[in-house]
Image (cartoon, rainbow, N blue to C red; front, side, top):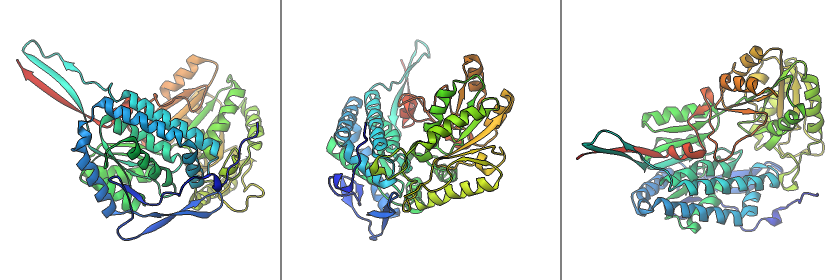
Length: 489
């Protein structure tokens, strides 16, 4: 089957370049803009308004007004109906949104279309859950009636990353809307297009003006202003550990609840009794999917010495066949998102070669791709567990293989970092695998599979990988306060 290729001519309508605040497209008061770049060509896609303190203040105040206006009178079922309608609108325009995503971040269109299916599933899950979040009665005795009510926390801030721009918007905004909150979204400056287009569809779906607002800009001004705004009552952020610490510290000044999903250096542990065919297949997607720009990637392969060579031979054979090219050409892998990310990944590859690790595959720029932020699928083996290659998040198509001899050694290497997002174990002995699952320090542990789960399954990290959980019913509870009501009879 031949995969369809695309061109800019397939894009219907202009690229969005203004903030969406209180139901209107608006520019920045000082006229500032920034350029969003196509990482496949390094060409400017669009000039986008750059927001700051003023724009965030207007957006938050609009959200606050509507939080106490018409929006509070919508029943949970009515909120769910609007979210269902929004999912239908996005599904009808999936190709347009996918092209926005591909042009902005470089991923193949087929992946962007897959991401859009995930966005619709996320919206529909939360739409269906909107009227199913229930309080409880408390048994205080015959002379009292005591019960709890669930209420929206208020205006919520959503600072989203560039690797899955619209997917990360949906992951936190959908439950916030289902809970009855109003939202202000700050997309990553590398990828603002789909978030801006999303806001317009919210208006078309029937959400009142001010419920969904999007302000484009940079973290140091727009993001900081959003976090510190006194009317913001909840914050969700996905991104780096360094930025997460700053947001956590800023939120503490206003005693605001925060959900953070931060970095990962996730161990995929392959035992000597594992199904190597399955493990190598999963490692291919886990390490190289989205060009390795995934928080939950299988970037650290912990291999039992007895199967290390066979496993790496299988993985390298598959990885060598991956095609790399422009997102519109629908190859297997696209470019990295930006020149900064390209330079970072290249620095790790260069340092890896100097550290004594053996380069099994790749390590360079694909032939024929002299423009764009492209990196070949790369595999290092014989990596020192104490090296930067083994300890730091690379966020590129670079798989790092380490070896172990005993279960205790594997566990020590896996848990030996500050990260704790996900981990995986491959073994035919389910008791052995479950023992590892109990002892691994991670928010999610996957057995004999990678990227297991869906919108129903809570996700999040421990240690330096984050605070709180998203997705599933816990994802909606992030945006609800519990109020207790007691009555003496």
